[in-house]
Length: 261
Image (cartoon, rainbow, N blue to C red; front, side):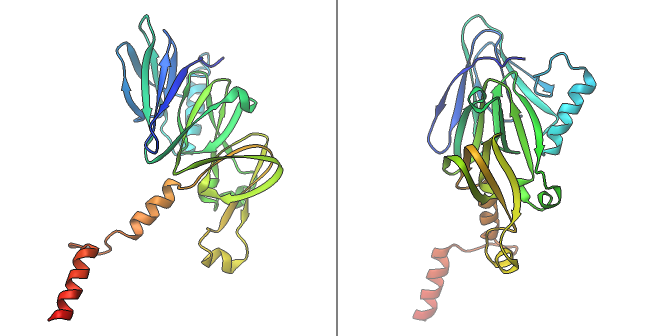
């Protein structure tokens, strides 16, 4: 199934959203809960699977949806269709501060691999599957880098990443990155998980136990602030005990009062 040809514009800087323009009977698919607004005549329906194989039977759709469960996503996706006569718009918002990355699958050889939580929305006809690290044993301990989504088709897909997004082009090179900082890469890149140095580096280096290694020729997208890193920092600085926690100003004032007494 050929993907629908959709137009779009990305709005905002660090809290972006993408506005999709749909011609009559065009459809865009998205993760549940990502919709920001939709104009009149946009109809939405929750369906099992991505709709890329309309002739597949119930078991086929169930098998495809089961792959999404492996990646931690819902069985269902929301389909937004323009049922009117003219052009209509629907917008999807990023779930946390960062950037929205548009990628034309026609320019990636029809396939893209991305982190399991990077996918935001795509033109109908895009197939969303799952890909595993070849070294399953290491991948089981690779954190975010173990399970990847495989996006295939010939239309536009939209990814979301935290912080600043950097596109790196590899020319028969090898790059090692934190597994959480990897957003997506072209299928021409060889992906693997490797141990992060010796035991001391693994335990005290602060870079995690495993790193993702990317080797070959093609494009790689990296993010400077993965959500997992931001969440860990918030939890580390949250109150550890019950009751009220004084702010820095209150603590400083209390110390000054004590010195003056």
